[in-house]
Length: 192
Image (tube, rainbow, N blue to C red; front, side):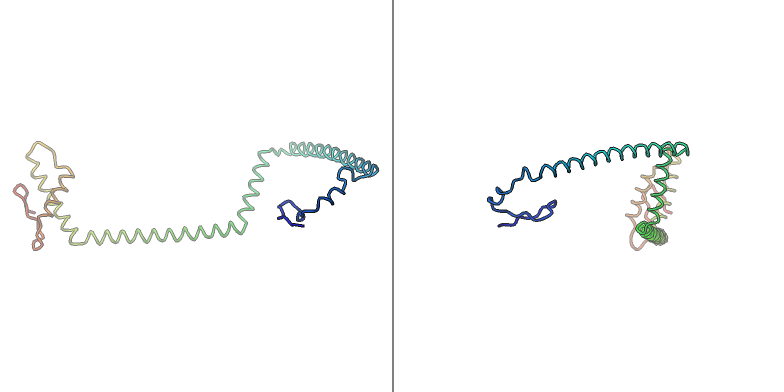
């Protein structure tokens, strides 16, 4: 005799048996006529009970609906009450409380990190603005802008564009020598 693997719905392991044993059992007629009549009678009674219970349930549901209608409870109000009850139950659950606390802590830490980052960036910009390189560049831009304005005053065109000013400032910066912090001016620019 060999045992097969049990399935999910099998209550007991299935075993293979000899074919001779199976042929000895009569599977078609295992009940006597009395037992058969008794089972059919019980089945008929159960079906009648089920039918009666369905009628009683339908009557109770109808009465239930009538009482709700008299109280003014509509399906929409009922849905709203169920939603509010579910929302309250969820908020009072430990999982929600833990999640809420965790998110609150994370939000506070993130806010603090952004504040620190903003302060650091502001400080770096302040340090950069006060650096000698930036001050030198700022002076060159101011000098170039004033030179362009003086050059353009006599001409018919308007003032120089922002790109021209930056280009002139970069040109002036490129001509700067390490020993001299003042830019050398070209023939058409005035020294500041």
